[in-house]
Length: 155
Image (cartoon, rainbow, N blue to C red; front, side):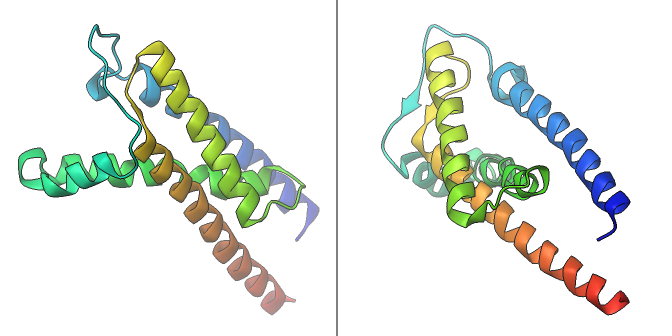
C-alpha cells in the first residue's frame, strides 16, 4: 500500500474513532431518550442472559424495534471498536486481544453506569458489547483480506 494512502486511511480512522467515542459517551450517559437521566430508582442486572431472554420473550409487548435496538444496538455499537483499533495501531491485535479490550471497555462503561446511576448496569450488555467487538474484528479481517487481494491484482 502506498504511504500516502496508508496515511489517509490512518487519519480518517482517527477522525472516525474520535467521532465514535463522542457519540458513545453521549448515547451511554447523556441521551434522555434512552433513559440517561439520574433517578431515585435504579435497575441493574447481574445474571447473564436475563434481559436478553426477557426481551425475546416479550417482543410483542416491547415491540420489534425496541428488541432490535437493545439487542442488536449493543452489538453494533461495539463493532467499530473491533474494526478500527487494528487500523489505528501498529500493534498486532488479534481476535483474543480485541475481544478482551471490548470486554474491558464494556465493563468500565457498565460500572460507570452503576456508580453514576445513568443508564442501567447490565451484564447482558457486556456480553453483547463484547460480541460486537469480536464481530468488528472479524469484519476487519475480512475487509483487510479483500483489500490485500485487490491490491495484489493491481500489481
